[in-house]
Length: 270
Image (cartoon, helix red, strand yellow):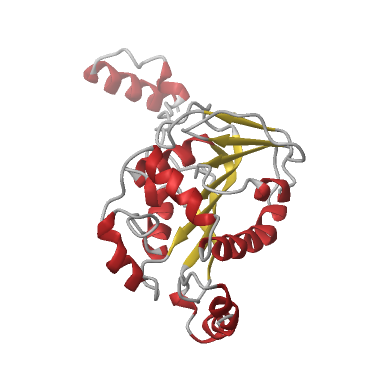
């Protein structure tokens, strides 16, 4: 299963998020972000990708929001907070190291050629104790049936590279992150019928309580670990200088026989 590269997949993903079930799924994700983003502070927030509404950026208390959008560069619509938009790819960011407080990735890893490189770039640009927030699709959910049926047609999101939350946590820990939280959500099947989706709301409550591992989506929050230096004791000890007896200090340059004679004369004086 592999999506078509470039702008075609991103356009189809944006269209999917504007229709059911994508619109319902997006609403659930925004509800999760309303709980997470206000608790993260700093000066600069970087969002990788622009697949759906940027309203989530208005939730954050961080004053400066930056959006990486590889397709276009546009001014923010009226009513949205001031933000910067730049063209670029998430695996090679034109951003200075140790300069970003929060990195937000809404389904960025599923539609990139090298998710490991994207995570390395996020680690590079984050400051010490900065946070990364990753939204992803869960490969082990009832949506797997739709993925098997539609993924071969290169139709997003089913053709994307879904990554397990456990594997993502391992990758982040190897990069020096501490996992703050990992939460799954949305337990309804991806149906396009509005009435059926409304009647199946009870599945979200049941799934959250009885089988939380099978949610269709997950959000992982991780904090960049601060490298601490542990002082080590030196393995060597300085030698103490050998003390010379005061009466023999003047004879230190004499030969062995002369030293013996000098010591005999000292004893006769006593």
